[in-house]
Image (cartoon, protein in one colour):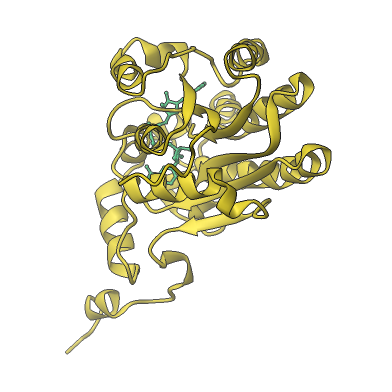
Length: 270
Ligand SMILES: NC(=O)c1ccc[n+]([C@@H]2O[C@H](COP(=O)([O-])OP(=O)(O)OC[C@H]3O[C@@H](n4cnc5c(N)ncnc54)[C@H](O)[C@@H]3O)[C@@H](O)[C@H]2O)c1
């Protein structure tokens, strides 16, 4: 259902890899709500070709950019400026840990991989926002959302070094949210999403158990990707103009639940 909530808004959406991607759903919903946007992903992700289908569906184009490379970000932001004048919203939906991918535990990290994890999954948000500020690419009252996970606050052993990346990502959102807010009333928030069956999600060891546990712990159950997209749309809209520098849980209540009856039942002796 569309209410034209983003009519007239221009944006950039990072991270749509395939139909399961949270960014894919955000793009579909943003299009339905009347937004125009560029799609982008790392050049390697482009090889899979899926994103071109999404571009066709959303009547737009794809501009490849490795989010760790400032020159790629400059190229993308300049293209957005040329096309739209400036952008009103950006989705940062990027995460990757070579340590997690290769099954390296938190106590046996490869430090080159660790640097890559932090660069791709967190510092890329700083690079994006610093470059956007220098190029003056985001319009006044623009909104930037990055996706994160509760492992930034609490330990989930199989999430490995991604937990550190998410803590840094949330800190960067606060830091840049302050500076971009003062400079141009641009708001920056992170959305902390439930475990979701995507390429990035299923790379985490024991993901099924992880999802089932969260499902049983959350009063509303795990939040689906489409609902995460809907939440992002509200954050891009003018209905949330004064929300900034926040980490916003979109998790069916998981983050505030100590224990649920469903989980208790699994531990009862009688
Ligand atoms: N799936 C979950 O359980 C879950 C839960 C909470 C938060 N998140 C976060 O949501 C975001 C999106 O992940 P997803 O679950 O949709 O999975 P996904 O695998 O579909 O998306 C991850 C994206 O990151 C992109 N990417 C990786 N390296 C990049 C680079 N150098 N430059 C540009 N893009 C790059 C990938 O190509 C991919 O499109 C991530 O930040 C992830 O950590 C996911």
